Length: 61
Image: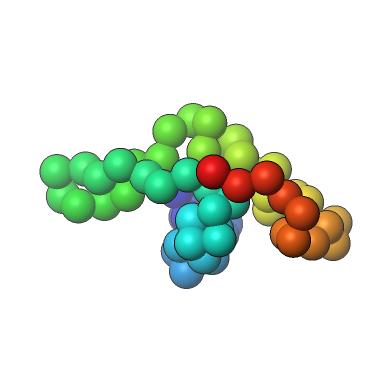
């Protein structure tokens, strides 16, 4: 998911760690599998960050 969104893998992992994104399933090759809802949420989070909104009061999973 990181390459298609322009967000680094470490940033995606951090968003999961701080619960901005739900935990992902795994493929047979042990890669993370995010559903379409998680991809849309990631796009929203990225856009909000670009606008300068802080994470502190965001709802989490």
